[in-house]
Each structure stands twice: as structure tokens, then as C-alpha cells.
Length: 111
Length: 113
Image 1 (spheres, chains in turn orange, purple):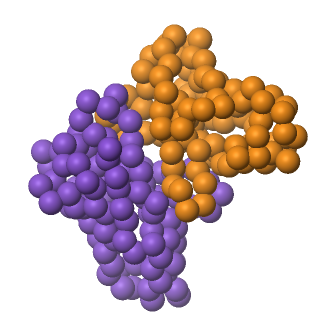
Image 2 (tube, rainbow over the protein chains, first blue to last red):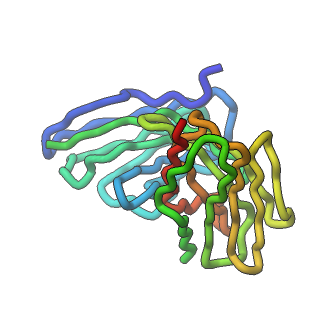
């Protein structure tokens, strides 16, 4: 009963490096979301997907790219990491307007 | 643009007390409203979901109400316990938004033994 699994859990990057965060869900959900959570800012939507092969921009998409090649996976990429992207990243999935299920987060530090 | 506000930002109560957390939203054209709990270093756990046509939902010691016309929701916790200590987040799905959630910044609840 894994639910939503995020990989990795922690990562430290240097400015300019690239990386990919992986989100996997085993609930056959159509909708998947990537959020970032920052102190004083709350949770903000980066990108989301309404089904396999689709992606769309959220509130704060700049500096990030996403892909949903398989229904169960949603990848978040940072092409050239910046210190402003230091944050905790959460992935979530759901059936439309039903409750979103969240992963435990990826804590990312950019030096 | 939908905005969600939660008051208070932090709340400390003694064990056993009943308490109310408040959430307000600016656009009443919502699909539903959800309350989540977040423990330190963890993801969010869904507590209650209220559809726009409903007035309240209950789960155990938790009761959430929704007044869509006034843009308000409350989360009532009865007989609070130290294990209830966490951050509580309110979020709304606005109509026609592809089911995207807009979150408040949360209320940090501490229940003292």
C-alpha cells in the first residue's frame, strides 16, 4: 500500500546543476501535481497533469519542467538549479475533485 | 484569483479543550473545500472534504463546516489530545480550475498535556 512515493528524499545541489525528482503513484489516479512549500509562502502549485502525456503550468512554473510519459509517474526537472529553488517539494495525485494523496516530500538545498 | 486565509497562524491549547480553526476564501465559486493535516517533516494527510453543495462533514472528533456564500469554513476539534498537534491546512478547488487546490498557509496547533 505505497500510495505516493517520492525519490529522492533529500538532495543537495550546487548552483547550475540539474536534477530530476521522481513521483510514483500506485492508485491509478489520473491527476498528478507538483508543489513547493516554503516558510511563510505555503504550498504553491508548480505544474500538474490531467492524464498520461499531458502537462500544464501552475502558479510558479519558471525554472522547472515536467513529464508524464506513464500514468503512474510524474517527473519534475530542474535544468539549472538556483538558490531560490531551495524548498521542500511535494507530489500529489487524485481522481479529479477527490482528496489529493501526498508523498512525504523531497527536501532540496541549492548551494 | 482565489486567495485562502487561515486564522490564527498558531494556537496553543491545554489537552481536553474544544477548539475551532478558521479558513476564509475570496471567490465563492468553489467545487469543494478540503482540510489537511501536516506533521513535521511529513506530507499532507486529507482529513475532511466538503463538496460545495454540503454544509458540513464529520469524522470522529473532527467537524468541518462550510458557508460558501460568506467564503468561510471552520474545523472544529473536540476534546483535543497531544496527538492532534500538527499544522492544519485548508484548501479549495475553484470551479473550472482542473481540480487545482489553492492552499492557505496553515494553523500550527499545539496541544499541551
